Image 1 (spheres, rainbow, N blue to C red):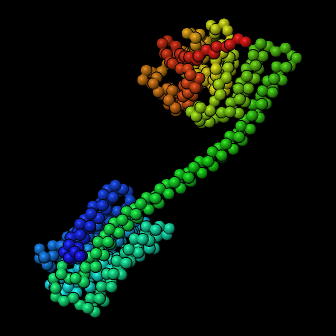
Image 2: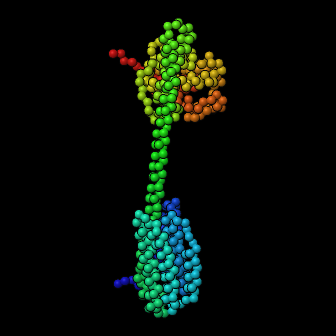
Length: 454
């Protein structure tokens, strides 16, 4: 046996309140989705309208009529704004508001049970029109989105049922009976329960589709940015290759002329011969640098991403060559050929940066010197100068990338030299320290390579 109409209305009230709570919680969960706030307001208005229906016999009938119908109109007004925003359209208030403003006062002209049919016609006209507007918005913007099409069909069906009631009331008018004893409205309330459930689920599906669209858009943006970065990297590589070729030609010419001058039969003075040897060494190292690390950014990338290969390197020979390039004093207390496991390109860069830094800040260029020591199974390389030193508060930052103190700004530099020093030292498992007691001294500690005799 089916429940009476009052029980069905009670079920409608419970259903609409649960639907309103679900839409509100979903809106609170993903506030960034525009439209859910209006869907939640629509659900709340529908719940209040259903409650006003249930209280029809307990409060003033005219108050119940105005409140229930106004709330139902407002619920579909908010649903209309919700579907517009969920379809990426702006809200539009004039047409639906005008419809509500025109129809709502008409209920006052038809009070009492004897005018139930007239009120049903007014209500059906308003709800049917608003439901049709919701369905049209969704259907026009439902390309490849099944959730929108499904909810659009639900609004069309609701609109059709509402509008069908108008000729039905005109053909077979309702007699003067109490509203909650109106047996012909039984199926309408059952349909209202189903509609409330399906509408709530539909809005949740619409929000999920909107999230998927946003995610797809973000993925496309990332993919586009990746393509741009890839093209930029290719252009940079082409530019570096071209620049490398342009650098190699003059450097090669310098080295060839230095070799030719050294091979001349004419006896060279010691100073000239030393200068030519220094030019040859510098040109060789420049050629090697151009081949593998033409600019600072490439070098930073290689260091930070561990793009290097360690092999046995003679520290004594390496320091001799670098000191010759800068024409600074080199002293060594190590009697053997000091061997370390090092990177043949970056290890000279380490000491060249320290020596260049010393030459830049020294009061007297002759004070710059490099000392090689052996201590506790490690090699210590000290680079000293008589500059003003570095203030205590800046010493914690001098190895940071792009950091430049006030004196560095005055002396020039990119802020990468000491950063490379620290990174290359760490690359070799060593450490670099700074002391400003008397002379400014950078000390690099590297592990000694034990050479196994065969």
